Structures are given as C-alpha cells and as structure tokens.
Amino acid sequence: MLKSRLDALRAIRYAGDEPSIYGLKPGDGTDGSETKRQLLTSAVKVIPELFPALSPIMTRVQKVLTGMPFELFVFSDGAPKAFCSGNGAHEATILVSSGLVERFGPEELAFVLGHELGHGVFCHNSYPNPTEVDDTLDKLKVLALWRAREITADRAGLVATGDTNAAFRAMMKLATGLSDRFIRFDVTAFLDQVKDLEKTGPSASFLLSTHPFITARIWALLWFQMSEQWYEVKGMRGTPGLSAAELDRKVAKELHLTTEERKR
Image 1 (cartoon, one colour):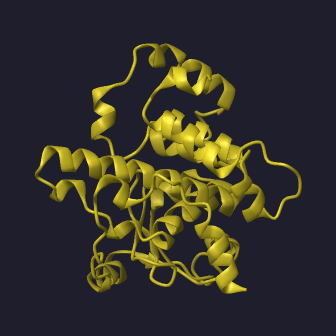
Image 2 (tube, rainbow, N blue to C red):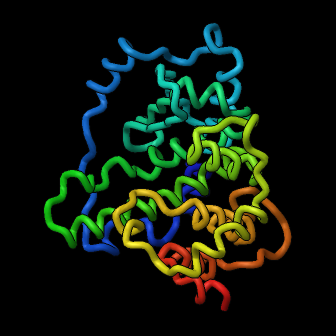
Image 3 (tube, rainbow, N blue to C red):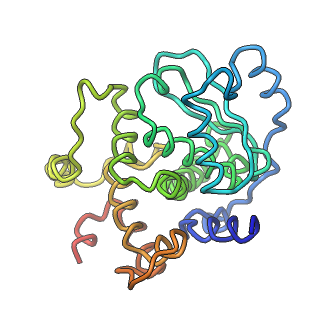
C-alpha cells in the first residue's frame, strides 16, 4: 500500500523537472544532521502536546501524500517562510515560520506542507545550487530547473489539500506577506489583472528567478486539475480534459512566457 501510494505521487512529477534535460546531474544532497542539531536548539518540533492545531494538519498531509511520518519544526520569523531539508520521503524535515503559521488557515497550511514535502519526496535538495555555479550558462540552466521543480512541488501541495482556492490563497500570502484581513483572493480577477503585464513580453528578471511567476503557477495548477494525473492520484472517475503530455506542453509554454502560444 505504501509503495503504491508513493508510486502514484511520483507520477505527478512535471516532465520538465528533470536535471538531465538541462545537461545537469543531481548530487547527493547535504548531510541533514547539522541542520537537525540547529533546529533542536533554535526551533520547536511540532508534537500534539505542544501544537494541537498544527499536528492534525501534519498528520493528514502525511497520510495523503506518502503514508510516512515527517518532522515539522516552527521557528521564529515574522515573515511567512517554509523550507524542506533532506532527500526522499523518509528524510524530509519541514520548517515553517511563526509568521506563516499565524497567517495561514488549515487548508493553506496543508498546501504549504504538501509543497515542501514534495521537495523532499522528489529529492529536489540534491539539485545543483545556483549560488554555487559560476558559469553564466550553467547558472541559467540550474535556475530553469529550480523553476521546474516548483511546478512539481505545487502539484504535491494541491494533492495534499485538494482545495484549489486554498492553494492560490497560500501563494498570494507567501508573495505578499499579508493575511486574510487584507486579501480577498479571486483567481479570475487576479489573472485578468496581469494581462497588461503580459503584453510587455518576457522579463529578463524571470531568467534569474528560482520560482516561476505566481501567474504561471496558478495556470499550471488549474491545468493540473484537468489532467489525467490528477484524476489518477485522486482516484477520480470520468474523462480528464488533458493528457499528461498535453498538460506538460502547456506548462512548458507558460514557463517560457510564450503567452500567445498558451491561447492556441
């Protein structure tokens, strides 16, 4: 059962999330023991006795995605932040800031935890680090790979919560640092708002970013929920609107900011 669950999860991987496509090789990743020691002295581990509201969310994400326990720590930082250390479902350790916990609702937290656990499951921490690459062309390749891995992690996050609106709200809160007091997120209104920006064409800053633009991530998740991969991982009946190949082609075009091609 556990193996089949992990196999189903691995099937959601975005096709562009593959180092060999860029002529790159994953490494072994960093030893997590030092990170663990730092966490034990500077952060607090989430257990039911200390975090009765967080623990059930962590347990649900674990059951939905991998069936394997992971460790979650909360550290003090007013900004909403989340990280994952370790490679493989059995080594994943997730860190979330106090600012994130304070601002995010249960389903938004489930998306974030699922996203970060996805980084662990897909061994994203073994990918080359762009800050450690000197050659300009190689750095651009690594950055493109990092943007691709975010698409995979977003899919894991959506599987964890199952709530598309919660995923979009989480993205908006991470991007702005704001709470529900200031945000009323409407996906249609937001995507309409960026049409003027798209008319200006690709931005050079995009090539130097580790994350896709939030609009690209939203489109990618909307399409993902129409795909055969979503139907399979959720055990849904019916005929999906997009095959896996069609989904990945649309996402690849969006990541390259070819707006006109998206309309075809």
